[in-house]
Image 1 (tube, each protein chain N blue to C red):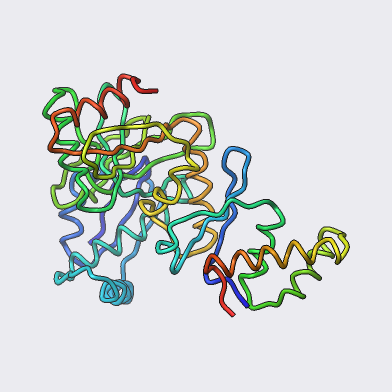
Image 2 (image 1 turned 180 degrees about the horizontal axis):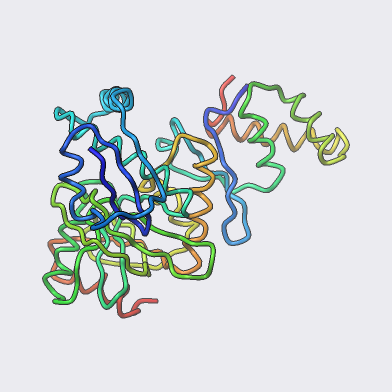
Length: 245
Length: 88
């Protein structure tokens, strides 16, 4: 199948084998013909290599369409680096045209936490609940958080881009507390939530993009307990209202 | 001897850090605060080498004397071994 999607401000022409990829990309299909910035051609060989990669991890994937989905994700993530765009693992929520990312290992509680933002603020919405792209241009412009079709099992996403203002690294704790930190203090943990290409040059580009983030994005350590009543207020007041600076 | 990890140089707030990348980087879960010379030693350790080779290379690049460079290299390599970052 051949179709074009628009993700992170780039038109991506996709040649896929299985229909599942097309179905999952539907929210990002372009309505008419556009000149592609990126062209991705998926082959049986690439799918085979991805299956081998999966077998070496604890991920269980049985549907070949899902494997192709992962291939497409990897190829787009690598291609977007040339456009100053990197992939991060995290949940991004937007309020008043500002985006805030919560990042942590899977299962920590990101989705539960952003749900508390949705429950407490009618204007809040999810940009991406799992794997947003971040555009970090060379200019002084604010980095932009982008929705994408790769939105986790809850499929929480919006086809939009929003200025990214803060990244909070979450860690479970007994009490809720948030503190602002510098990039140097958070870097080892942040790196674990950033897509790291195997190609050395692309990895250097990724590090350059991370470095640029600190110009306009604040970093936080958020020690949280989703079961305590003040959990939403602690993060919201710090990140959105600027309290606890 | 050789580094167990691949490191990339990154500048943060005017300081240099060596970021582990590639295989095994996640388990290290740390970045190294380094100066230019330490970063250069880490780069030379990406390939199989000896302490003597590193000293010789740094003498060329920094136009330094052996009696000044050799002890610093020796101490840094000792620290790297202690941290589990090098393999024989």
